[in-house]
Length: 429
Image 1 (cartoon, rainbow, N blue to C red):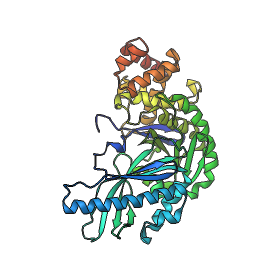
Image 2: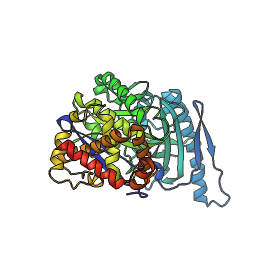
Image 3: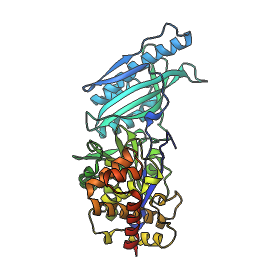
């Protein structure tokens, strides 16, 4: 729980027990404010730097650190310009040779992802590394865009280590970002191959390169559906999708998902949600549904997350509705799980339908199905536009369900809730 925003993991049972998990997280911009002593800015495809001048009241140690920060900032400027210009030699030139292998991987992955904006903003002052004379650590806030040159950049805070070297400090290492909110991005730790479409960008590892053409086609089709669920402003400039092999599934964005998880979406800032699919156990027959579901989250959710468990049914129900692709309700994949849930442990309250992290697969599938059927009823009765207005009021504007229902549907939520539950029970009968 952070700043009053619940951060649940959500799951959905897919055919052959392939399950979706949506991770709704707070942004890295929730980090504590730190003194910015140098700021790299973009101007066209070039990086420029703005520095904060030294204070007359600095003590000697602070003055030394501030001077070093200015020199590091200049090095970061050179590296940013090299990345955007595709100059690998210049990108590596600021670093010790021992760091080149990692940097080449990052450079290659970012270039494959069509990086169009790369900003490096030092946060705070560099601190000396104990036991390593002449070496310093500095947190740097990197901001990036892929494909679209005018996107709102996504931020990531990364520790960097430097060695004093006169006017041009040498980069010793880039650490992995390991924030509790998002974990490590794929481009930090993996070689990537990428396919870019009109609405999506799909990345995977070289070993899974052969999957890219099919995944891109499926993602493009899903994006056309998801675009219709952008409830606050325009859809994402590009939907970002990462297809993970077994090793990558355990490392990208922190890993640690339940065994039955098949995919998730994580909020990374700048209005973007980056989607990860598991290559293991995901049948081709379920990929289209999962992509529609996930990309609908990316289109519909606010970047700061959603209010919490009491609205889980609405968030997941909308994504399930999109994932179902307009098929008749009797063909919905999870009806058998809904029946088992309704006939056993469900208390008939939508706000309590959220599955726990250790829930059995059937319970997870039933929970998703209840959310789908509740949303399906509201769409059937009021139409998709009013449903999206209700979603916006509850999830984006954080209005209470009863307030939103009166405002959008002109009916009390208690009545509508009972109607939704009656519809679920009728379909599951």
